[in-house]
Amino acid sequence: MVRITDNILAETEYLGCNIGCVFTEQGPVLVDTPALPGDIRDLSQRLRSLSHPDIAYLIYTHEHFDHLIGGAHFTRRIVAHQDTVSEITYLKESLPKEVNRFFPDIYRQHKEAFDSAEIVLPQITFERELTLHMGDRTLRLFHAGGHSAGSLAVHIPEDKVLFAGDNIVSDMPLVTPTSLFRGWIDFLHMVEAMDIDIIIPGHGVLCGREAATKTRVYFEAMRDRVMNLFDRGASQEEIIRETDLTTYLPVAQNETVKQQVASTVAAMYEQVKKGMLGA
Image (cartoon, rainbow, N blue to C red):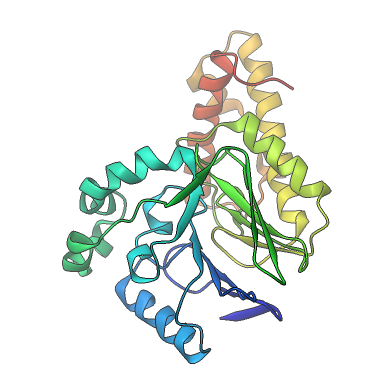
């Protein structure tokens, strides 16, 4: 684990999402969980080696399974946005199917663990903001939306650190199948104005506010291009073909990125068509 500040550690090497732990006077607060059995055991051992076996709270940054599979191994004192509950309830019955759908090779390797995994619903939910007053540390949770309906961010002002969830990722394509771009762009503008030094993204290497800027510029360039072509009567297929965002890509271009850009343009087209986006 990487020590971000005296009170915050992060792990970016697990196969799955990034994990963070904020050590406070009232106990450690875990942000998201590992997905694979070996990584869950590894994190548990590391916390024990730091004399912090008992987690005060676990925060789910959103409802996607790669962020919450390990919850039952750490605590049932779980905090999440209220819009995560229906999806997490669904995962309680369908986790093996969903893992196999997206990661069939990983599912086959760990079938027994995924088939028997216990998915834990959040104990505490909120709508807009929630503050955990943990003695020497304040954790400000706020609804972000964007990447998913239940996406939230965690700001620790004393350390100038932000856990951004999957609204910010680094060195990899953005995942956008269920995203709402207006809220995502608003969130990125807000992050750019925050007094923070370090962002722990949902996936990828640690970064700063420049990662928010890169993603915001990318989405705004895409939005403007899609809206312009839509107003001229172009079809979805024409818009995908004619939207070249090479200059604005927040990550290096490869075939996977090209496919993800096309998927994102298609999703943005649908939101423009429904009047959900505007400059």
